[in-house]
Amino acid sequence: QQQVKQSPQSLIVQKGGISIINCAYENTAFDYFPWYQQFPGKGPALLIAIRPDVSEKKEGRFTISFNKSAKQFSLHIMDSQPGDSATYFCAASSNNQGGKLIFGQGTELSVKP
Amino acid sequence: SQTIHQWPATLVQPVGSPLSLECTVEGTSNPNLYWYRQAAGRGLQLLFYSVGIGQISSEVPQNLSASRPQDRQFILSSKKLLLSDSGFYLCAWSVKTGIGQPQHFGDGTRLSIL
Image (cartoon, rainbow over all chains, first blue to last red; front, side):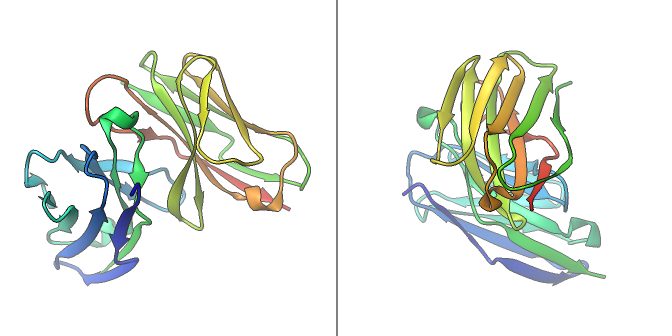
């Protein structure tokens, strides 16, 4: 019940295309859903996050779509660029469980020029 | 602004040797602190977290231990390293209050056991 399942494991997108990464969870107590971006040899960096009281959040080319009833959320990267090539992690946490983040297994995104 | 420092960046150690990795946070006080291990560039596994000085919670049984001797200092240790301890070790911090506080990561230590 504590798992966050992420798909796909890897994704290849052409420059200018849309990258979509999906995550699903079981624990209905989760109340915070961040996405992290990680470049090789670096720590993950917070990209964008959402709380379950909204269905969508957009920051620049990055959008989170959240479906509370389906217990799913996804990251959309519009106009994908080669510089977006990185590993992306979804995560979830619950404030009444200490706020510890449960991470998905990651998606390796490659944007081809 | 807040910053997090981890060192060393890379470390090669023989099996059976001791380990000490250090993490410090600047620009904030009384943070939550976390140690993660990442294998093969994927999947962050939470090892330890701390809500205050001397307060350590272990998430998985293992060959490692953690300590928090000062408010903004978090140390990961081992008395005798195993081959399975190889990996990318990440420290992170977050503020305590409020729902949905993000964790902020350091740039990690790449540990190779020979």
